[in-house]
Amino acid sequence: MVNLIRFTAMSSFNKLKTLPVDPTVFGSEEIQIIESKTIVPLIKGYIDHIFSPIKATCDQDHTPALLKKQGTASIIGILGGMGPEASLKLLGMVDKKYPNATIYLLMITKTPDRTQAILNTTTLEPQEKIHHIFKHASQFLTDLGCQTILMPCNTAHYFAKSVKNLTSMVEAISSELKKSNLDSIVVLSTQGTRDAKIYADLPVNQVITLNDSDQEKITSAIYDEVKANGVTDKAIDLFTDVVKIYYEKGHTTFGLCCTELPLIANDHRTAKKLAPYHPTWIDPMVCVVDYLIPNKLISPS
Image 1 (cartoon, rainbow, N blue to C red):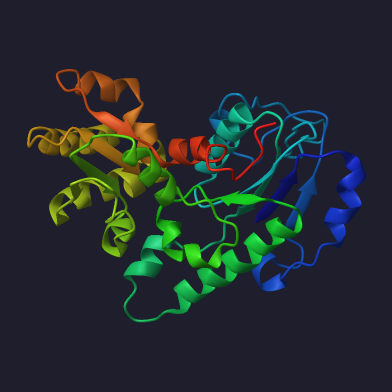
Image 2 (tube, helix red, strand yellow):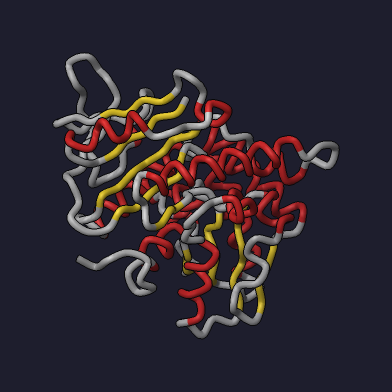
């Protein structure tokens, strides 16, 4: 299902309804354009996972909606739905960092799994569908006036060429690393991100990718645990086991290059299990939010 939320005054509502949409991307009856005076959950079932500063409430009819005051400066688009929690988290981060911005969040939850599409050697159809969705969705956001588009899915950056006006998390984390004197970074990610070498060219002396055995642990933590059941004890065990292996080899900085991984890394149970260690986490989603103004992608006012 697609949910489009525009955080603007009602005077712009009619413009939204007249924008052309591709039915092969959005479906004929799958768009909800919602504006409300109260802040309520974006997706039913995620009420307990709304991230600060967005607070969950509900209209009398329990219609999902979100409120953001009309911005006076920049217009930022978020192409979300590839992990609804990550989309909501990014929404909260952008809102907190840029309170004067107008924000659009476009949720397309029927996007094919990016890792499966990358690893599929029998057909290119899933990849072609993703390119098609991203092309039309980003054009839709651009037509709404978005100056830049953020995409809270690391693996999806394999398809970045199809996203118009994308501010890339890869570019953002590279910019951050150029300011550091890091010798190495361990990239923790999905297998799709690893195999597609999305983060292979980060500007450090050594970009460490996981071997197959360690990748299986991280993959299981992402898919079998966090995506399926939340941050479980098993997810933390799998994650910390891998971190310890590379930390003990002298690699102390880790790129959290899947949006599920910061949920594990920042859990208090993880800190307890890694108490003798002092890893440094680098989150591409944090980097991309911080990257916008210094690189003149949006206005500071």
